[in-house]
Image (cartoon, rainbow, N blue to C red; front, side):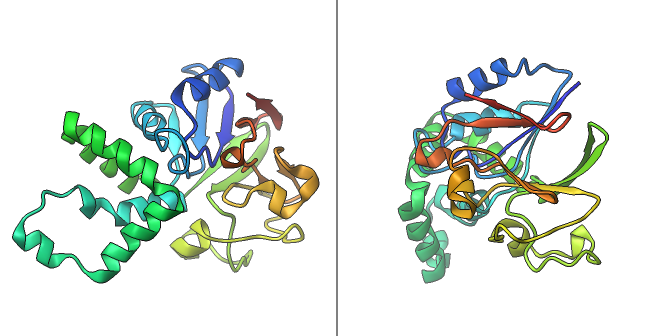
Length: 236
């Protein structure tokens, strides 16, 4: 039984994703954690991978900032009535336009196509995202790991996980010199490793207190899986 982590797939196609899992010999006995940002930017916007994850009992999607913004745009899939149109605010429409400009356009198009064929499935995907956790704690290979999307903004070792705000878990931008827990390894994505250390472009970045697994798939680098049991990396 192995435990794997990946993050920031940003529209990776389902065949490529499944091929990566096959390369790792991923099985029903293993567990996969995806640390958010499955969607947006490329291909079908990650909708096929999102649907696949929603059906797996041994895969957990943590909420990412891109999923958070998609949830804020759910109104775009509501039936349009005169009363509903009157309820739309300028802020809601600006959120939708900004999301579309910043990579969500492919996701919105894919979801609209899916909604024409199976509206219940789209509603189910939004329910799945609403239920996605912000963090998980995992033990593997004799170590304890704290998993979240973006690291820990305003880190304080005295704070409990629930003390961190959604923004601190989904939008944090750590630096290479930040330290987290001494006895727990924090694993996150959100910030491409190349932005923290140019020599780590396209590769998982390890420090003594945290690991960044956003290798820059959206920039063309191959997707990876990190095995928490032995900290090995499987690359497409």
